[in-house]
Image 1 (spheres, helix red, strand yellow):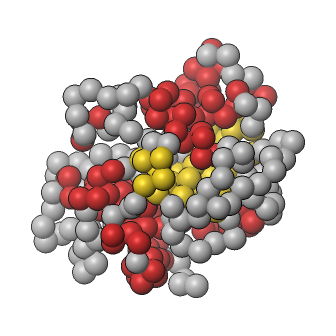
Image 2 (cartoon, one colour):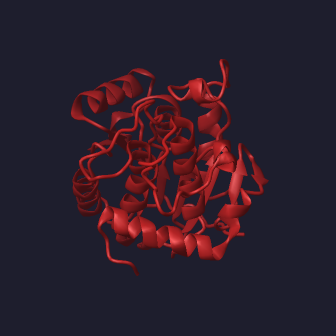
Length: 271
């Protein structure tokens, strides 16, 4: 089980931080004294998120803004480069950004199915591009905000963009399974995935008509960001409890196969 002594000042990047669980996670972490890099898909939504955080009592000196549209991998790379330059030490990366898969199959300019790219490939690429800052200090963490829906999924290895047989539910679940599997890759930092509960956010319609508050979901995420919380590397957490992930997410060969696929889809060289 991994744990570390908290440094005097920590820097945390939260993706998808303009609303819902991501916004609440940013607010809670900044309130604990962390410097929080608030990711937004565009400048306007980012400025609005910062304004609302300050109005909620957050010290503006604790906040930074990073902008990238995750449906464009070149913007993910550019944002990672800016973050690495401005923050050579990154203590925590929260991969929270997510979209529901559209009812009609949608492909990005990079050639990837939209939810696969935004929910998984962008997070995979961002984590890789920030390897330097994440490795700069012992005890760094990557928290992938996944979903219990990963249990219903399978990776369509020969057709990951589901051109032959598409359904929005299967596409979204596949992206969450991929995110859960990726947390098991061996890295210099500690990676985990978490289902923060069914929460009243923009993704609620995928699960139910009612859910916990976004704040309750964020509290589950923030707990895993806390260096006082010991983590099992590669583990999956259901809210606050260590939980078995789907069997497909527990196979080392699947982790290797997914990383090879992801490297190809983001145009990176396999390690």
